[in-house]
Length: 105
Image 1 (tube, rainbow, N blue to C red):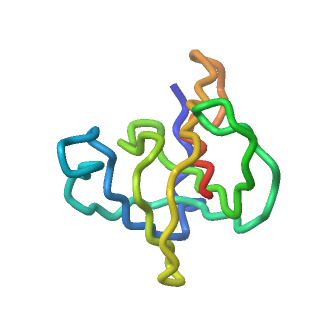
Image 2 (image 1 turned 30 degrees about the vertical axis):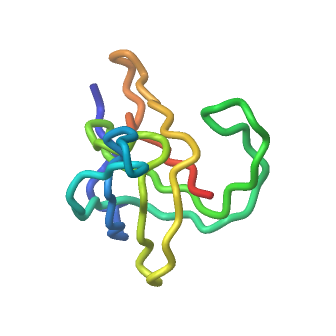
């Protein structure tokens, strides 16, 4: 496996991973910082639930990052957002920059 090069991970986002839903609503794990490359670009995407939505940013993170759809994310600018999709980009042993593509609402 070829990891995304560390020198590309220029930004840090704060992630509160979605753990599930409880009696009082969604439950989140503790906040952790994740190094990433952040691309703030608006585009139409299909969310994890199948609905069409707009993504305002995409974070390219190490493949082993724990960022499930529905997680809360705080960007370096201080803006809070939610994960629409977390897509594994794994070349299966090919010399590609394996990473987790995190599409943010």
